[in-house]
Image 1 (tube, rainbow, N blue to C red):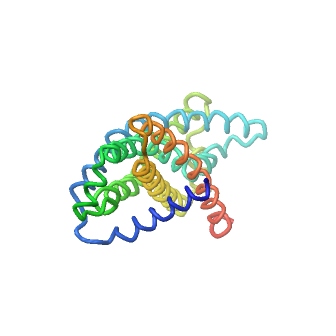
Image 2: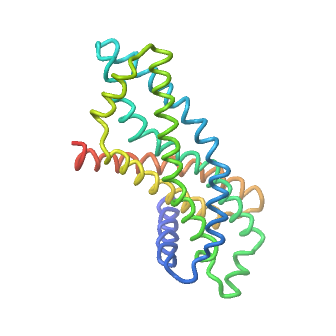
Length: 248
């Protein structure tokens, strides 16, 4: 059952990528979906990034203080926030806010037989409905990742300097010593991949929903859970490849 479900998801994903270059591209729907994702995700994402940065500064500060290496607190922000926390937080917020809404919308269309009506009219639901939504998720995710990175680093800096009495110069010096432009690029690649996966999973669960409103609700819950599982696996794979090829 699991293998069959995974096979159907892969087939739908490949079909979506196949029809994506087809003209005309529905720009109006893409812009509307992108704006919707930003409107429901930007503020919660920024608010979640604050405790992430503060907690990382607290735990890292306490740990490295025991080794007498307080001057390397800024370096932990590169490893923790830029490389790992920011893309994961971005993907979780997109899955929880935008992905659930996309799944609910497509699921409602499915149980109302609107998807079948489009197919009868000769309109491909993947090209008309799925492609703009998936493209919007993948497009917005890197920008949200930049927001999380900025807010998280500011929160980490302020918490370390103000609350823990750290040195601003040491924080910035250790940050600059370890930070690489490739760290930001790999974070953006992660965010793009996570946004693409979140959109595809939400679309698949919405189009496969059945059993009335209860089935749509179950599909929304499964969307968030499955997206979280997939993104952690993707995060591990991308981080491993990056550490072997660049950071290592």
